[in-house]
Image (cartoon, rainbow, N blue to C red; front, side):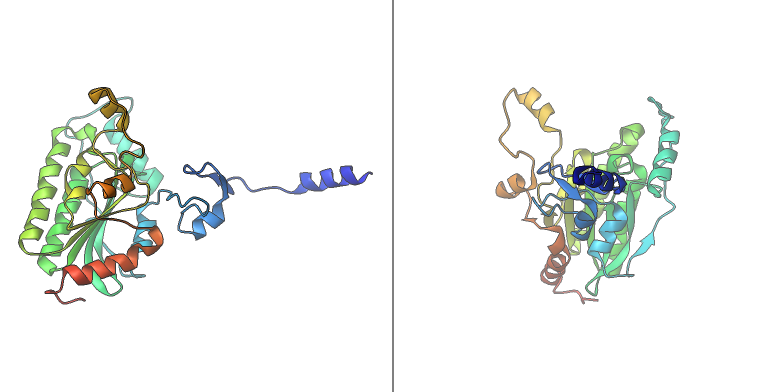
Length: 281
């Protein structure tokens, strides 16, 4: 057997596990999955931030073991008996089985380097992180806990907007959560809003843009309607990087763009600056 044939046979025996490589949506390079995960799901070549789920976000933001979940059993009803290609009730069950969550947001209390906070983390993998009545209720209750305990509220948004399957019941959540955050402002309770990719629709038009400090992850898409819809409406070509976090920062719509690795210490510094009158616990 020639050297070439031996080499060919040895290559055949090497099996690469399925799913070991992932294509980056930013630079289009092929990345070793474990390397990407060790880097907090950030591309080591171009700094593209992959989406992460709510549980991963909790581990990233809060002190280990400090997160206590509240309102886990709150779920959306089906007030309109809505049906498209799949009945809404069945769609909720399918997403619950897929994600291990009952809704598109997780809420609770936690600590950030020892400072207590109330938090709501949205998860895009559950029906695009859409805000229905249950998500709105969780956000409102989290704001009320922050008000009662005199601790800051932190939300992480990753959503396509209001959930169309609940119609007006979903749109009403925009007013409810905005009013709840308004009560925090009246009592000088800090509210930090973190925007992840993507944040759109009724979420952007309500609580996501009401933070005392609004932070976004690099290159996150943030807006109300998609760029294609806007171009068709105004009959003009949009600027490069329109609706990206850096574009919004340049035009004064958000306050900071922060790398995933740096988010926790940045939040701690913000809490110390925003809450001098409250005891840091």
